[in-house]
Length: 239
Image 1 (cartoon, rainbow, N blue to C red):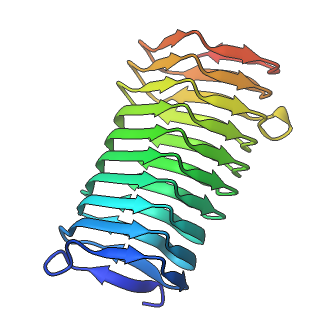
Image 2 (cartoon, one colour):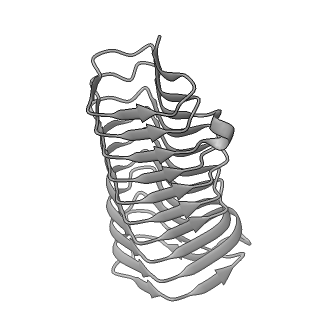
């Protein structure tokens, strides 16, 4: 596989430290119950599929890596849990950080720009996205689908094309103190909540210079408190 630079089997490949590799057209993949691995300061570019792909693995640390021009920059996938991503950069990917069917994942102090979606979470639980940035995304900064128990706090999202944060069919989560500014030509949505997203808290977020600051469609029992919504054409809406 032209995209595969390293594969962990989970049988002999536990406790790996992969440090400061330069990989072009090669990716890193860890799978099959591999655990206690660390990926530090690697530069991974130009892969058809993944830059760094973690499948069915636990207790991994992904720190200060750079991924550019991949389909998915950092992928935490299918049964993976207890993984931290700290201080990484994702640029020019379809998804900068892709979390799918995973749990207990922490993303802290990451920077993402010029992706389609900087942070994309689906079918997952106990996910934390804090102190991170998303800028100039062609679709959205943070996208959450069919997930529960998320903490999305203290993030800065600037110049998304369609939406800053999308919350779809997601429950029991908190979105707090996020700064969401300047969708493209003021035609996007700061926070878009849809498809049965219930029992969520949206607290002290700042949504400025969009078509709608927030838009909620077909949801119930969500708490909106202390948010700032200004300089938006439509301000806010519920449906």
